[in-house]
Length: 117
Image 1: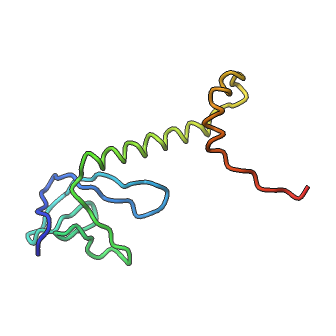
Image 2 (image 1 turned 135 degrees about the horizontal axis):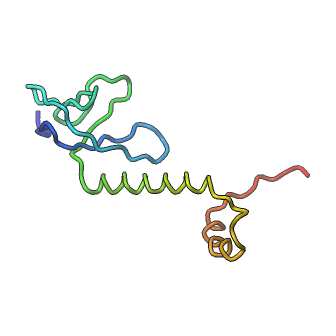
């Protein structure tokens, strides 16, 4: 069977299995079995990167790349900003500060649901 030749200590990209835009994470291979399977945490992957066992949805791994790391960093920055936005005391902003933000806020504002008034 062709596939990857995993090495202990090699960094691999583990895609996230859920929703929410999280691209996944970079993990390190803990050990490699004599048959060439990679063990990462409690999961085992074959030479093609497919998870062995693990329930009805089987994950996969790939050798980690700079693109994977950049996607993860971008997601983490966005998440940090979203958490920060939730804590903003909007009433403390000056009208000038709000005017600076207004174009961005208008662009992404969700329309209000119609009411029966």
